[in-house]
Every structure is written in C-alpha cells, then in structure tokens.
Length: 168
Image 1 (cartoon, rainbow, N blue to C red):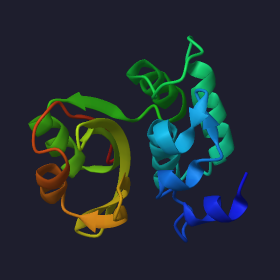
Image 2: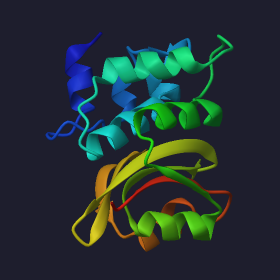
Image 3: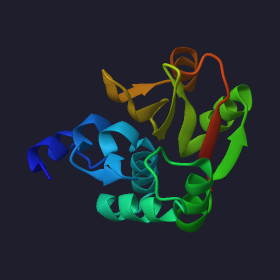
Image 4: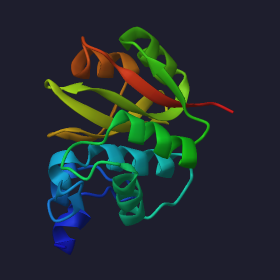
C-alpha cells in the first residue's frame, strides 16, 4: 500500500475523510477509492461514538459479510448487519424529511443518499451547532454545516436513509 497516499486520506484526529486516497486498498474485488464509502462511513461512525476500530479490520469485516464474491458497493443488508453488531444503538430512519429530522437530533450517524446521482454512504458527527461530515464529495472531504444545508446541497431529492445514533 502506498502509505503516503493513505495518510492524506485521514484527518488529524483520525477520521477517514478522502476515499480517493484508498486506491491501493481492495474492497469487494475493487479499489476502495471506487466503492469504499460504506466501510469508510462505518469506520468514521464508530470513531465518532468513541470506539477505536482499526480501519483495516472494518474493511475486512464488511467485505466478508457480502455473501456473493463479486465486485460492487456495500449492500444495505451488509451495512445493517455490520451496524447491528458494532453500533447497536443506531436507528434506521427512511425518507428524506424523516431522515434529516432524525439526524438533526442525533449525535452521529451515516447517511445513504445519492451524491450526484451515485449511491453514497457518508458519516457525520455533531460539532457545536452544526455537523461535521466526512467523505461527502471532492472539495468537501471534511466539512461542517447545518443539517438543513446538507439536505439542500447533497440530497435535495430522492430517497434518503440515515443510521442515527440518538442521544443517550
């Protein structure tokens, strides 16, 4: 693995912020720079909730949950199973308005939505009055914004799902 490239994909506080830096990592038979948003979001969510997972293990564990060994993205069934095992407090909320509302009242989570018409997973964590998002798109790899702005800019229409960790 190209260690220098991987290092650029992490924030100073250890979140994975840039999927493009993971071209040397294999996930589901492909470069994770193409299809790694699911395991990256799961890693970032676990980190946001105080766990300290090893990113390599998260990638391997989620890859192994796919029953069919063909290249492709993270399946929703795999994301659900993985989060049930590792972050059982998350609640899945479906539908754009309901998902954004649930996320606005959560401490962290993962969105499943379409970023420029491509299915995408992205993690977030509450930061002050806003939310810090990871690996949204080029130019917004690590950014803070309101949930309203996120909804307007990144998922203005289409089906949206959130796996939100409620406040305890």
